[in-house]
Image (cartoon, rainbow, N blue to C red; front, side, top):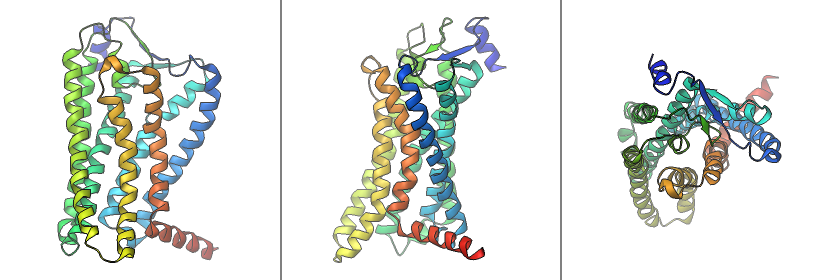
Length: 317
């Protein structure tokens, strides 16, 4: 009903949107299709492996791997919300998406992106508790609190997405339906509005600061305390172990937040649409693909669990 009212608001003949994507670079579309298909398959394989190992190996049923499983599931959903459609558009002349499909895609992608911001902050707190409060760790990070923090991340992320999506599609588009992007994203959709969007942009910027920078502040505080704790460890082997454990999370945080801040916290008049497309490609496909690689290669527990599962499968034959 809400979608029907919005369609009537924006004109009775307004049936959907055209995602221009990379149609201005036809020579690039085949290359992008092959590369993105490979990346997508690796994303599915890597994140599914992390989730499976976390459930199959009892040694990985800890708060750290509970949050990592949430992150992997989130990355699977995030990538799947945009990439399959992009792959189809790269190989066909039809670049359309229905009005309802665009609403759903924006809601899901924005919700998952916000949830990841919050979840990365929660994961930093988990590392802080594990390293700085080792004797109280199991008391602090008990299963109920872990479930509550993960649930809160998802709830706040999709609560914000609901508000942003409704407010954005209440803006008058005056029949404009060509989106200069490969999926329905806030900056690209704002360019279609035929009314003053200053108030909405200010609201987006404010919420972006809260959603992005509060977790960043928590991450900085957590790792500041971790560095202090590590410097008190006299054993160089102990220091390497701690930095190895936390290095994976810092790398993932840097990749995700760097691109998200570029996309959402810069003035709209300095926003380059071409740069925006490639930045969006980075955090919708590259980051979800490399997350499992970063956590796996740097983590002896995950590598050990993988070897045990593979050995069991080999022995059963």
